[in-house]
Length: 365
Image (cartoon, rainbow, N blue to C red; front, top):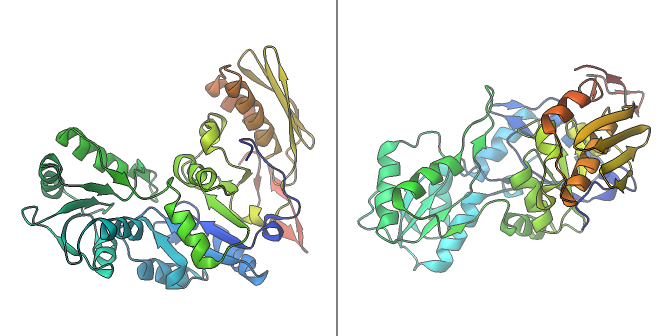
């Protein structure tokens, strides 16, 4: 697959039969739904799409996650949720004998996943045959110390994921990756296996479970959701409702670049435009419908700032031009780029569709 932005033939809903959705920062943040997510997903189901929920968060069971989604009004069955705790438990089940004790460094979701595959979670490292670590907001020094001692003793160590942060209503907070890093530094080695995104196991399991023929990955994080999409050979939509902002998008490495970009899940109903790139001796340029952006000696210049129906055409052109420069070994002034794009990226207003016509935007938001 190309590592630059793609054009859709119809809307993303027309082009795909299954959505593989990240949760935190895409569908909800904490207890609350992301604006417009519920209506967008209910609309997707009404057009015949199936929804799968792919999450690195190992702290809750699939049933608890599905119940939360249903409480928000999002269509979800328990079996629609695939999490990294299940992937980690399945890996350990293939490594250990039935009934083997596994030192649990995590929460309820991981405990249930281990039990469901016939393993025995334990808090006592003296009887453990392996260590598994997943996110839990209740992890403390005592559990991390026990994990460190077990890892230093040479026990196999499986991490559900390495996300550095988790989104919260107050902003990003420390995630499992940082806690895994604490143990790794103290123990002098890293985990033997990481089971969550961006590895492809979760995506493959969800594709098989939902019988997908043309799945679309939807996420807010480049280094897990979108890198995982490319690893699994699937197209990916980046929504700007979570951790990724303008600077991060412009700096995206080839392995983690999205195929499509939208403000939020309403972008599923959009036809995504062609972005054309031209390379030059001192930089690159890109056009997206009426938007034209050039990068000259690392500086981003907006030549024409037509925002397009969803307000993102200038950003699309800037991203494509920045990626071309990076691929050619040329740097881009990211701070200057963000400043240059300010005022040219618009957000849809609350009533983005009137009588079925999308694309009403409000500048400067």
